[in-house]
Amino acid sequence: MRLLKIYLAILLFFTTSIFVSQTNFYGIIEYESKINGKKLDEYLSKKRSEIKNNYVVKSLDKVFFYTKGIKSKLIFTDRKGLFIVEDKLSLDIQDLGQRINYTSAGGTKEYYYDDNNKTYLIKECDAVGECFIFPNKFLKWQLTQETKKINGYISYKATRSNGKVIAWYTPKIPISFGPKGEYGLPGLILELAIGKIIFKAKKIVLNPKQKIIVEELKGGEFVTFEEYKKIIAKAKKKVFGN
Amino acid sequence: MGFKFYKMKRLILSLVFLLAVGVSFINASSNDEVLPNSKEAIEVVEEFGCASDCVQASREGALAFAEDHEDRSPEGELMQLYGNFYTACYSANCA
Image 1: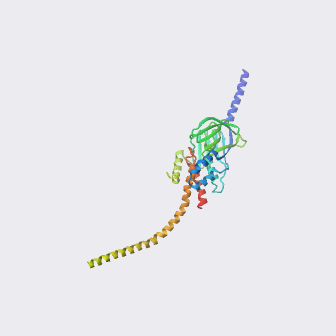
Image 2: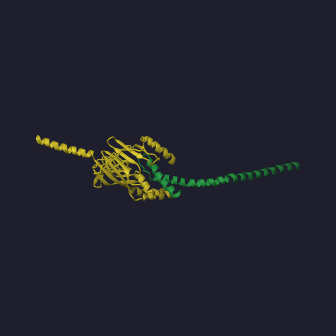
Image 3: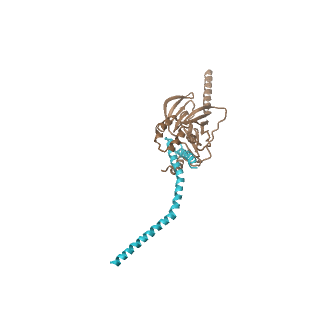
């Protein structure tokens, strides 16, 4: 009976330790984004020849052939996270390749995640010249059993928007966040193919010595998703028409 | 008969005179008012043409590069891409 009590005490200790370590899970993930090779092939084999305006072709060439990676990072602690692009824009206003790749990686946007309160927000300042903070809505993922190894982690494939967005996540790191506001998967996103670019995790630092603080978004007008949609629609109408 | 013919001839000549004077007046007023304006108009059109070409090219570039899936910031990124293309175009061709 006494031996059983000792066993139970040891079991309780380990269970508590695991629970505590999981709740205090924190880290920094460094990503790099580039033009997705598949999208470049599509552009060169089909879309490029369909564009009649030579100036547009030259501009898009600058963007698609931009080879430097854009650095971004995700920090997380206590089931909260923040994703931002780290690279700064070059002073050359005509460096179109960098500017478009920078914007596509997230630009000056800030993506805030809070699994505790189920609050997911985006701060955006560049679209219409004012800063807005609005909810980052949940988008449903389709999980698959397809796997591949990324940085030594077995990662599973998930897709959304009819397979147009592809994420590879690892359940070994139980953080449901990823680059550019993506969230809701049962593990950290290590690779994300979205639009014309692809994010790849380059450095994974778990439980570093430095203290990680994830602050809530501030410095912008809080609006609902629908309100933000209307603001952008109004601005878009002026530029693109109906 | 002779008087009638004379009267008719005078009427026709008067009409021709009136027509000639009228046409010369119209031409004169055209020269005075329309030409300077049309010169100014051409200048404005040329200036607007540069920016409008950039608008057109930037729209096309942004739409070609924009994400073709459900966007987390509803088309806010499209506006930013447009801004990138337009700024680069304007500074290269119009500034």
